Each structure stands twice: as structure tokens, then as C-alpha cells.
Image (cartoon, rainbow, N blue to C red; front, top):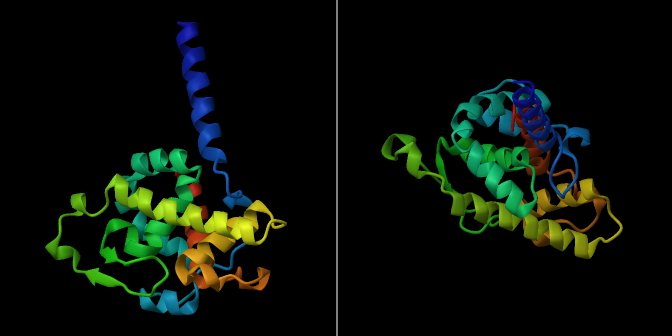
Length: 197
């Protein structure tokens, strides 16, 4: 019986260490972020902004994202991206799969939001779609790494997130690492990280 408890303890330890800090692109737990802009907060009916707004929006999206959590872990392992970051991106782009957003190519500003009353939630996000978004993010991060080889992993993650939304040419220096998309996604990701993602 003690061997069974030892094995369960080992599995719990392995699971908790995997979820505590993994990903090749910085540690989201240590990143500072001011959170969502007041415009994002107002767009979602909030009277406040910053980290509090990002956390509230993540809290609203969390029930929808829970169904995709195993998929985010699989994709995260494949691309070495923390699933909490993937959840942050999905929360920002599609309210956690609660609405379908067709962005064309990320960063081009074209978004078509389709009413969730017309589509079944189970068909909104597939593993290939989540993989594609994550692959775009990692490609942007790698481009930032190439352009700015002396930056830290945290700066690469911030740069990749800003380039993901604003296009590859958006990041010209470290001054451009404070974009709204990045700040909001990181605050949401921290929330998700603290809630099991």
C-alpha cells in the first residue's frame, strides 16, 4: 500500500512541477504587466482597467477554456509554450471560445465576430486551430529573438505577443514591448496560471 502512496505522491509532484513553470519563452509568474487598457475594460462593460480588468475577463472566460485545457497542454508541450499563455491569447481573441473570431492572419486587424447563438461551442476551437495560433506566436517570438539577440526570454515573450497582434514590424525596440495586447494577455495568463493552467 505504501508503494501506491509513494507513486501517487510522485505523480502529484511531477504534475505540479510541470504546471508551475514550463515553456521556453520566459516565466509569466515573474513578468510585470499593467493589464488591460481602460478601452478594453469599457468594451466589455467594466468600469475599471488594468490587471483587475484582465483578471475579471479571464475569470469570465475560464469556464469556456476549461474544456480546451487538455488540448492547450498538448499544444503547449509541442511548441514549448506555457498553456496559461495560450489560454491568455484565446481569452483575449475569442473570449475563451465563447465567440468565434476569424482574424485572417494575426495582426492584420481584420476581425469578424460571429454570434454564439448560431454555432455550437464544441466546433469552435480544434487542436489544429490552437496549434496554428501557437505556431504563429512562436514564429513571432523567434523572429524577435533573431532581431534582438541580447534580449531576455521575458522580452522575447513580450515582443512575440506584441508582434502577434501588431505585425512583425511593430517591434522596433524595447520601447515597443508595452502594447495593449501583450499587457492584457500576460495578465490573463497569470490569472490562468494561478487557476490550474
